[in-house]
Image (cartoon, helix red, strand yellow):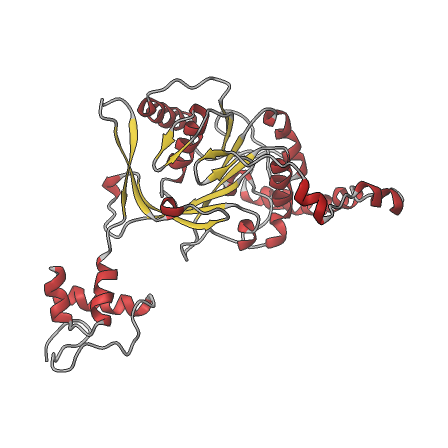
Length: 357
């Protein structure tokens, strides 16, 4: 069985990964069916169109309305320090208690298994305590279970042995939260689509068992989830957490929520919004605040420039310096919000920095 041990140095880890990579080829092929072809054919079941249309299939319930259905597969990604763990914990606690978080609500309490591969146990304790106090409800001990790397060995979920090790803990669970992919799936490469195969097969098997999965991951430099896009192929929902333009570290957990993929129709709930973690009104614990996104100065400036307004007029309209307006025009062009031929009206005598000549 493969486990993550912090004492193993990088050189040994590379040797282990290389050796395991060669050995993993044998079990994979050894699991190939050896039964006669006619018996294999009898194991596969097809559905005729009439069979499909007349089947009584239960409607999918929602664990968290509307973003996470029962048996759903979901991802949250954010840059380092982007509050993804705070949000994942809050979602787990809301589902476990049948309460709401941000603009989403859990219709009833379900059982949640939370896997953490990164944080210290004392930090997890503080975060869970503050979020639970902010909810103001009791949560049954068997409705929110935690497997933390700082408390016990955790298996490498990117291997068959690691997945089998976790199986007994998943009995009766409705939601598995994996926080995060980098620390709990450490075999393979982020950018190698093939290295995601075992994880993809596993979460699909969990879905067939009636277990929803929430994956927590890092964002890459592009702002999208880091590594191979194959991770998103079978997912129902992907949420990207982004920092507001005016974000300051002193603000703590404050971010924009963007729905980047959804198989269902979310309506207004699918619109991006800003979320922040604030003190509860009674001073006990933390609670969430959500508000619609304000139009950014960049978007406002781009719209003005598209209409032919000069840098000087944009600066006056937005209440900023002409040099700032010039930089906004340059960034709008770089981000594709403004064509390079959308120049200010003639006669202003301004260059891109807003300086007059």
